[in-house]
Amino acid sequence: MEPIRFRPPLYEQRYEFVKSYINTYRPKKVADLGCSECSLLHRLKFLDFIEELVGVDIDEDVLKLKGYILTPLPIHYLEPLERALTVTLYQGSVSEKDPALLGFDLITCIELIEHLEADILEKFQNVLFGFMAPRAVVISTPNVEFNVLLSEKTGFRHPDHKFEWDRKEFQNWAMNISRQYNYTAEFSGVGEAESEDKDVGYCSQIAIFRKNYTESVESMNIKKNYRSVYKRILHVVYPSIQEEKYLRKVVLNIALSHANRMKSNFLHNLFPEDDEEEANSSADNKKEPLSLWLSSLQTSAEIKENIVKPLFLEGDVIHVPLENLLAVPKLKELCGSLDVLQNMMTTEIQLSSDGSAIVYPLHVEDELDSDLNDT
Ligand SMILES: C[S@@+](CC[C@H](N)C(=O)[O-])C[C@H]1O[C@@H](n2cnc3c(N)ncnc32)[C@H](O)[C@@H]1O
Ligand SMILES: [Mg+2]
Image (cartoon, rainbow, N blue to C red; front, side, top):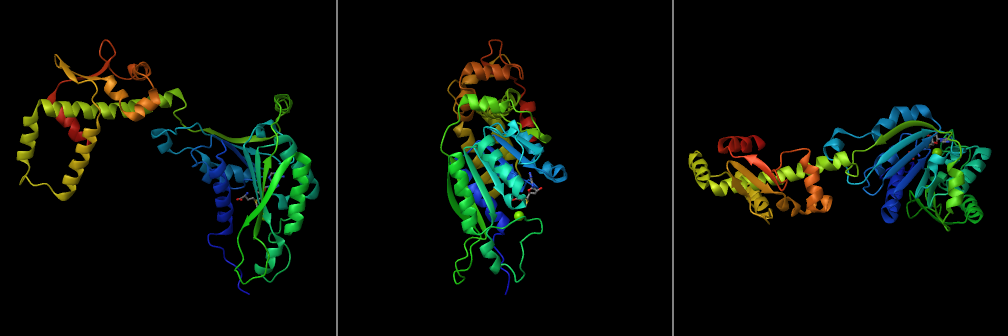
């Protein structure tokens, strides 16, 4: 018998299952127990509503070896996230209580439980549902009924498995836990058999638990005082505009790019002959299709600039009133008011003496040079 090959691979289907659950319920704090190489966490860090990601594994070496995939890249400093995001990895056993795992919206345990000895599994149930008590839990584990389709050989799918359950065993275990800890369980899975195969269920069976109660503040406070036992291996805070220093940077970048464009339009209107000279000086005065397309893009971008207060010259200084920048939707969203916008800009660049405008010296040649350098 040819062993079944899943497409996409089974592990990928498990991650996709978690991702689609997360996309539906949009949890902000998510932990993955038995996170191993952090592959699921890595996929989850791209979901833009998750603010806290935590991974726990007993194997310190794998966390140290693979944890780097969760650290920010240079692009994250250039383009800070809109939401806050922290990622933390702990070495520790899921059979031990640590307050770092309190208050989560979702905890996932993907192919973890079958690696736990009976006594550890017993403790783990109590730690996960009684102590951590997240709002939702997703647990996946092999469905032994499917093994007949996987290969001829008998025995467990992996040498480290301590058990493999059929659907009834898994569902009984999950239903007992639900009753004991006041959760509701639903069952699903990934990795389907071909239609002509007999009914063996999914290759990976999955239980989704949802908590039926809200924990009291007193109960949470007692748990928060438990002694920490997990060892922190990695803790990263992603650059985000929720932090003042990154918000300033983003506001400044957007504001200056718009202010520059407004200033260029203003200068081109003021000295239209420079444009003509430039046009006449081009070799045959004909634009290639690509440059035509690029210039049409620029024109539409320029038209979009919302001039609510005209730019003006005072001596040889161009004034770009900040009110125009506040009319840019993104800046309005980020700053809300003129005062905030002004405050963000004032320490970073030169404003007019009353703080109402960005000022640029009028040196047309420098201006045209700098335009060319910008492109
Ligand atoms: C099959 S791997 C999990 C794979 C991973 N969840 C994924 O889907 O990519 C099982 C993991 O559980 C971890 N593990 C086993 N016993 C544990 C325990 N008591 N506490 C925490 N992690 C444990 C192992 O070190 C291993 O990394
Ligand atoms: Mg396994």
